[in-house]
Image (cartoon, rainbow over all chains, first blue to last red; front, side, top):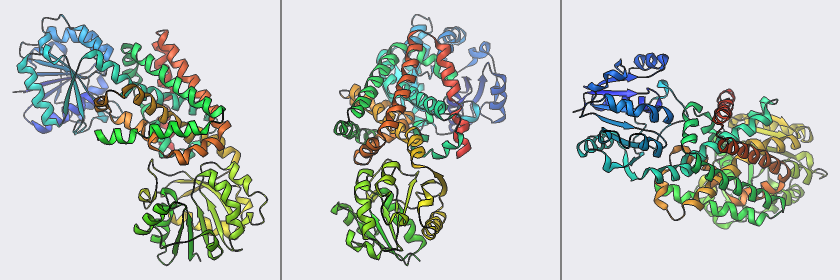
Amino acid sequence: MMEKIYIIGVGLIGGSFALDIKRLHPETKIFGIDHNEAHLNEALSLSIIDTTATLDDLKHADLVIVAIPVNATVTLLPEILDNISDSTLVIDVGSTKEDICDAVKNHPKRRNFLAMHPIAGTEFSGPSAAIQNLYKGKTNIICEVEDTAFKLQEKALKLFSEIGMRVRYMKPKAHDKHIAYMSHLSHISSFMLGKTVIEKEKNERDIFDMAGSGFESTVRLAKSSPEMWTPIFQQNKTNVIKTLEEYISNLKQFKEFMEQDDFEAIYKEMKDTNHIKEILKGIA
Amino acid sequence: MMEKIYIIGVGLIGGSFALDIKRLHPETKIFGIDHNEAHLNEALSLSIIDTTATLDDLKHADLVIVAIPVNATVTLLPEILDNISDSTLVIDVGSTKEDICDAVKNHPKRRNFLAMHPIAGTEFSGPSAAIQNLYKGKTNIICEVEDTAFKLQEKALKLFSEIGMRVRYMKPKAHDKHIAYMSHLSHISSFMLGKTVIEKEKNERDIFDMAGSGFESTVRLAKSSPEMWTPIFQQNKTNVIKTLEEYISNLKQFKEFMEQDDFEAIYKEMKDTNHIKEILKGIA
């Protein structure tokens, strides 16, 4: 039975969980906790949460979803676990897993915690960005599952299945390494594309008339929240720097092929990379 | 009156023009010319073209749309102009404009030619990728408009307006410089992102389960056709190399900020680039 659900961080990710849970279980009461007053009021008026709460109230919680920037999660998670009851399940949704798991490694309530990363989101943020069915058909990566109490694992898996997520299990270290390639690098490549174009075209605004759907989709992630992404890059620094080195080296080689008029090599680079079509089809 | 329309290159771009023209003017007869037999047969069976033709038939054409890779356009355009009648309008749709305009600068039939670049497309190619309304609401950049006969300009503009395109006029040199930022760089950043991830994860295929919508949209252009893009990069070499230098330099700076643990600077990089939101909203 999950009657009282506390969402810490009522933005895109936390808010979208709240909307799905309320739709599936109208009897639940959803409590919102956020250090941003405006977001709390917005979440109330959008009926994402039923009422506001504080960390002191967590002892009444059946489920706590922690959906705040990953640096705040590392700081706050031990305190959250201090405040809950023996039967409370706490899950976090952060895009990094190693530092978060480390932060509560030896906490007496560690078995009340489930570390996960739902691979879902949009480039928008805040309560108004929350949508129903954001998680439907998406992958949810769960880390250190064996460190969560069996009954609470069961409770969590039932919820994810109802929401329509498919579950994958990984170690935190492997998660952080691979997610650097599959997500964090995409964000930096997109941010730097946006920067390069804005710098160049700042005095020629009408040039953006030339933006087609190709530019728009490649630069889409450059709309993402710096409040959320700065601590992700900080916690995953080593892995992200490695992906950047490889990415920069590939770009330099492409540029050198062009400088050497080696357009056979340019063709081959693209032909080989077209393989991404089959790979993405396989997972769609 | 446009009764006989010849599409040279019956792929995504040429085929999509054929579909719109046929829908708007069912009385037109659409002829397809392509060096790829399989594409011609596909275009016939998809009713994109009514019949096939050869370059010798172009003297009967009211309108010729040249939608082939830009290197082939440079080679073939003079021969196409040799073959047409005095009242034929020839348009090309290439993603580069300087080399193409240069190729027919002194051709006796220069005034029968209109150079343009419709900013529209998808990552797919070939006749089966052709769709109706691809051009609706899209920008069409016309170069050297004053070098096209007035009556043919009028004919062309009427067609673009029926198809729903908005027209912008630019010089070929300016087009090629700005399109390097707004389109060509996006393609390279996407191809190299795909390459970096494939190289890393080639032995761990299940890792692509971690691909979210962020990775998918950022890498989308890496599905594009190397046959089409290699000659574009070749013709726009100088501009593209310059955008790559600036892009690589921005990526290196981002990496250095990370290495120096200067996450305030990382935050600022992203916050400033969020400005792309307003810019893209302005053009949507």
